[in-house]
Image 1 (tube, helix red, strand yellow):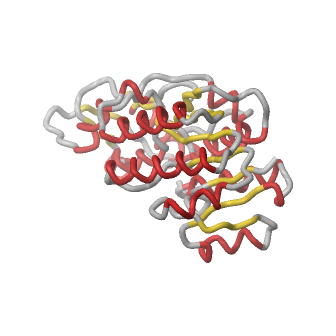
Image 2 (image 1 turned 180 degrees about the vertical axis):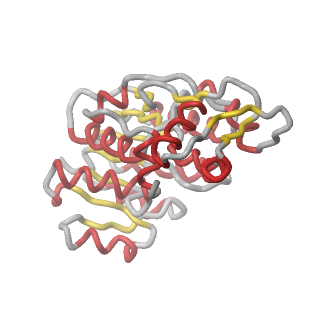
Image 3 (image 1 turned 135 degrees about the vertical axis):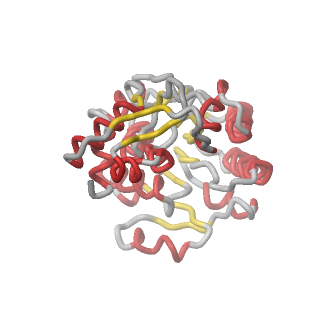
Length: 269
């Protein structure tokens, strides 16, 4: 079995690659890179490096050649029109290369979202289904890094975690857990045709974050809602499904998921 993956030089992709190297021999893995020189560290570990650029469609069919499974990590572009063009080129190249199965990183509960990125992911999922190739869709929740948008450092200093009024709930996931789930899907049987919602096993609220800050720091932190508070982040949260959860991620990762205190510990708290 040959696994080819895109995005290996990114944060999530590098974690997936580390997981794969724990599970399968390195000579069964190839990675594609827009700048292969940035992926050289993997060559010394026995991973094949191929040139492949979403913006150079002619490079992709050769980059994907011989893949029994292709991990297609979505493009990081913010321009959704350009991003979808890249995705269309990748799916077309995968079909031309006759890959066995595409594993695509989408977004959790894509049908319930109202942002342009949700449309891009849904359109890409349709392209994959229409390609006639085998597929597995990994619908990743927002990374736990959105905690950086919630003012946790200011809360540590002032003892109060502020938010606009509302029952804010979050189904975020750690990249490490998403990587473990992706590696399982890439190396195990029984996932073809499946769509997985990869979220926390249960949603967390701002009171949970305040308690985690208190426990990690040893200083009291409380959550308070402020009707006068204005926040771009909190204006965007209702446009995505942030509360619904699924057991898929915990089952695929094969271990308890990382939580708030783990995330804070990674940041030195």
